[in-house]
Image (cartoon, rainbow, N blue to C red; front, side, top):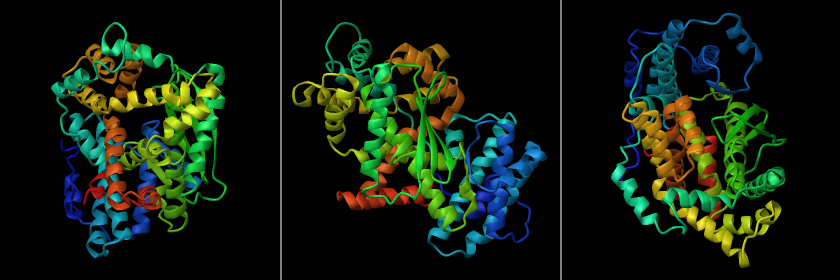
Length: 436
């Protein structure tokens, strides 16, 4: 299956795609970058949560809050800045400076699109992901998902449907609430130790963690700037033993925390590219952020090393029996790997729901059936889709694109693979740029 349909644009087409036709003055790229930051901050005043992180000049944020522009004026600004990029794109030589311009052009398309959505314009799922995240996932056939379920039907024993059996099987690997903090701390520390062997982390980087409830997500990294993060873990539902490493790598090392710290260190501090001091959630940057974070555990724990670490370190901390020589832990991890053919089920369910082909109840059934989760977790999944919509492609597709990039440029050697991965963490890239 072709995993992605990529849409690339020359700079003149970028401008045309959002309706820019008027001539603009020769605006220096540094000024365009500054105006882009203020534009994103201003949208954030209209949509809480749109600005995922900001660590630029405080007075810029104060200016926007003191005199909030209308959405109409913000759309005009997005068109102007997109057109202003055109002459820079025509004269800049290939290299990281050119990548910067392509990245900013794609971000501006997303900015323009998000304003249109806030103004009430409707897009199909695929249109939305193309404009916001620079990628489209081709349709996933229900028959292929059903075939995958049939192959997995003997995965676990017991009575009932595969979904019921799998939910019951996985429940035995739930971390007791009084062990959560110790287990997650050990997992995150291991993620960090393995990461810093290959990536020089910025001096003074650190994070704090919190356990929270009543969220649509399982974990979240709130980047604070200066290489500092707040990592939150949602405990609305029981946490499985594998979630400690998965979230520790995804939200921490070498995932979101390292991604944001590297961008700040390499692009903002060293190069002065101020546009990277702001992170609009609904933008191509998210595909890289979520993709590298979703693949992070495979970098930190290649092969069977995650199950081995869980068996020797996390199972005892959680008071669980890993079995003789860790066989029970390995069987559990192998079972999780076996359901990989269902990893695009959430994306397809979200597309059908947003495009009006599934009702809400049908989406709950879809997620429970094809993700092999309880209806309660499926309800949480629906809440996430209703809030974030096409954002769901960034995890699965982003991870697959990251894996392909690391394989293409890193080969099989650990140092080379980490070098390729580090490039993704510290370079202006979007989905279409990864495959060209």
